[in-house]
Image: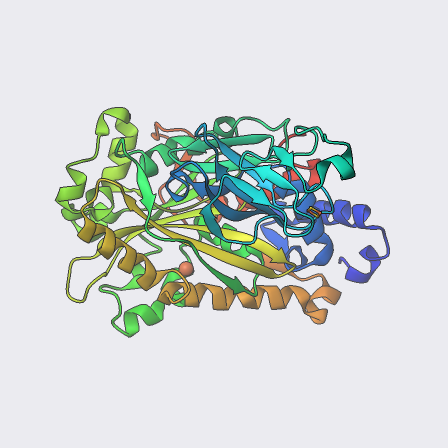
Amino acid sequence: MFKYNEVHKGDEVSYIEALCDRVERSLDEGLLPVDVFSDEKVFRAEMERIFTRTWVFVAHDSEIPNSGDYVLRKIGLDQVIVTRDPKGGVNVLLNHCRHRGTEVCHQDRGNASHFKCPYHGWIYKNNGDFVGAPDMRQAYGGRLDAKEWGLLRAPKVDSIHGFIFACLDENAPSLRDYLGGAAWMLDCIFNLHPDGMEVLGPPERFIVRADWKSGAENFCGDAYHVGTAHYSATLSGLIPGDVRETGPNARGYKFDGGHSFIGHALHDWFGPPFAFWGYPPEVQEQFDLSRFDAQQIEMMKKVPPTIGTIFPNFSFLRFPQPARSGEFPMAFTNIRMWQPSAPGVMELWVWEFDWKCAPQRHKDDSYLAGQFGFGAGGIFEQDDTAVWEGIARAATSPWNRRLGTQLHYGQLRVEPDPDWKGPGEYYPSIYGEYCQEAFWRRWLDDMRKGGAGQ
Ligand code: FES
Ligand code: FE
């Protein structure tokens, strides 16, 4: 049996290599070592091997619609300024001055043509170019190379349906290639109307004392927890129906690259009004289905994707939920980032979205429905984050560490549907934990190889 202390004698690199070997052996047996969570060495390796190399979501177009708009975001531990420059381009800039390194921007959002460093006053355009500094002639003989001394810029920035992603590895594949078959799914989720979706407000951010991977893997494919962790929502009458039906009505969509989605058979479960996530007729009538293939339309009518994760830490949620007392449940769209802060600690960022074309009342109700369940005060969010914090504590348990405890990831195998005509694989049952396994195998791959660009 693995002994934690033996491995800790080695240096950090060999520790990670040994851990990866253990994780691989464990996954082959339907297990996972508990110490992949909430561990300092693992966390440092993740920051270097995953978050500086994969595509990470940073902002939505509707958050920075005008020239000069910017928001502060994170790629792993790096704070970045996401700006809209005068040419309409999006720049993802490291928020550290090139002179002595302090942050040049201290506001979460705003509009600025330039950023002036608060320390000595170096000035940068909102595309990152250096433009000047105090006492240029006396200090620098009048010139500094603007390109050379600009803010560091993410070498790859791209978007899909307004969702902007950045990658710090210039050798990484394109965003579309990175997403692979999952892009086909994102088309269904975000491209039903040519005007797309928009944010309904700034993101909520709150600290959770849990590992970022606990949220990411849960949203990959864990419908098994709903009947237990969220049963209080049924007992208290806060939602109609019985949440214990969520697992049996859940299906799985698994794509290459560790990207996975849960789907729910809403049409069969709730009845005919629940085609297309249960959007009301005034919204559904505006959807343009001409851009989708037959499999996509069939899926959105009967088993739409309801929850999902794009590796590493971008997740999606769209589900019908009550907005106003006594009214028909309302489909909301919630986007979240499991933002790593420290070993076993994440900042959870949560946005509510709706279709730009939707009536204002729908937007209001959709926002309420999303916040009712998810977000800092959401009833489901409380249930989830409480149990995920327990996983982080298990990972730091000296008893678990001494014994090399492994967690159970080995539900009975489920076979994919052979008649599925879309990309990836469709599974008629979510039991089997194949989506979570795919997430961990992608994690393992990146931890071994150093990420998408290698
Ligand atoms: Fe920014 Fe000196 S640290 S100007
Ligand atoms: Fe949950």
